[in-house]
Length: 311
Image (cartoon, rainbow, N blue to C red; front, side, top):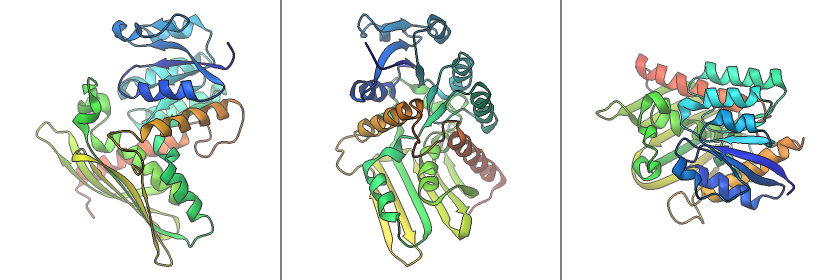
């Protein structure tokens, strides 16, 4: 069999989107899977390596790259091991729990000359791509607002670690914040965090937040997050200097909870494969800077919350 041989480490709720994309994207194929739960490995056919320890998967060889989609607190050690083994890494956002950890991985990727690709799936959304095309040649961007609302319990399934701040890195700010910020960065360039209004539940998990940011030329950014929303709402609104307003509904045409993710993860795998083939990519340059930048925004938001900095 030909094609890039990819190993998937972690078989939680997000892995199904990667596995489906690996079947659809030409030039790549699933070669191995890894999860601590051996029961999850039984569904894979002969010919696909099955491991309960990522170190055994790496030691077995026979791979050209790995996808890392494990709980957030395991991103650092697993990505570190893969990069040291010389394997390109596509890692589910966030890149790590903290910016310092993300910077460590980015530096290691540069040192080993191995691609490190943080997967921000919303940048591959059809409505977002159409909005980007519309912005080409349009008036300068004045402001960007990204809304990311969902009922988190509908998403996590058996992956209860999402609701454990020490494993997730926080709550909605740590988990949804990087995707929302990536949309702002994609449409208006890197931004600096400002105020943060964060609401937590009785167990201390941040369930909703409003973050204000600023970019070059006075552009304003706003991120609105809600983990208690009855349903799902994901959109981005751009105001231009001429007063016109453009909006992308990320869920349009994708009926059902999380249905938009299927085509977005095809975009991730397609771009990761292109990166490995040496082609220029539309977002991350392969060394993780977008992932590190998003972590800095998350950390700054939590600092602003603790300092009481509100808009």
